[in-house]
Amino acid sequence: MVDEPLLDKAARLIARLGRVTALTGAGISADSGVPTFRGRDGLWRRFKPEELATPEAFRRNPRLVWEWYRWRMEIIAKARPNPGHYALSELERLGLLECIVTQNVDGLHQKAGSKRVVELHGNIWRARCVECGYRLVFEKPPDDIPPRCPRCGGLMRPDVVWFGEPIPEDAWREAVECTLRSRVMLVVGTSGVVYPAALLPRIARDNGTLVVEVNVEPSALTEEVTDIFLQGRAADVLPRLVERVKKYLRATTSS
Ligand code: OAD
Image 1 (cartoon, rainbow, N blue to C red):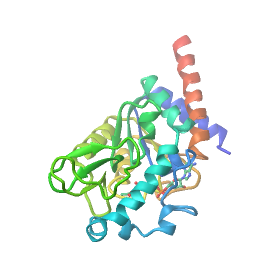
Image 2: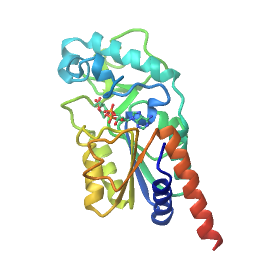
Image 3: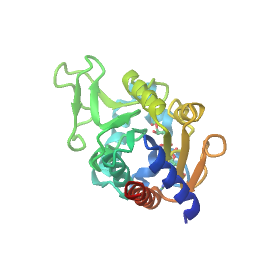
């Protein structure tokens, strides 16, 4: 159960400071039925990242890698945004959100209506040709894997970031600019162990930005970086937080 006085404090500060950047991780989509990577039921308990999510793994066995991504696409295709995703899109409509920086590849923020979403690790529905760079977007999981490039016949790969690969330059620049413009960073459902994404809350803190974190348990960031830790499920805490922010906004406009 989230600590009420802390929730209230976070809401009051968000209403007063505005300009929020949300950094989201797999935990925000957990309540939509998309498995997280770490933790008790995490994917990295059952699967080895070095066999499935590295450029070397893809070179060794593109079909195996595609099978894994197709399986995840099937899960994600059935997933719907949850109240946590909707709460963040509401924050944007209220004019309080700079952007969402997400490590997720599921596209659920956009499905919930969020417009300014920076995808640090790519998107599972996109693929790109390893030969000519041609990009395509799948509407459903592909039947034939590994897919071939419609332009040059080359091998297509998932357009996501794998271990050992850099974040696309534009996405990283946007994420940092957004962070530096913000007065609040809302860190949601991330273990905070994957870099460079985990640098953003540190950049925020060093810039004097308030760091509010929502997670079911403390993360690698909580002790060192977080100012206000709201313990609970994103699908539960975020809607309550945003309702409370609205209450404070109404109070300031009517006084
Ligand atoms: P992780 O799986 O590492 O962490 C998920 C976090 O969400 C944990 O801190 C959980 O405690 C928390 N959590 C679980 N359920 C929650 C809920 N209902 N509400 C709130 N929090 C919840 O996921 P990420 O931090 O996103 O990268 O992982 C970062 C990157 O590592 C991923 O983007 C992926 C992965 O390997 C690549 O594949 C490159």
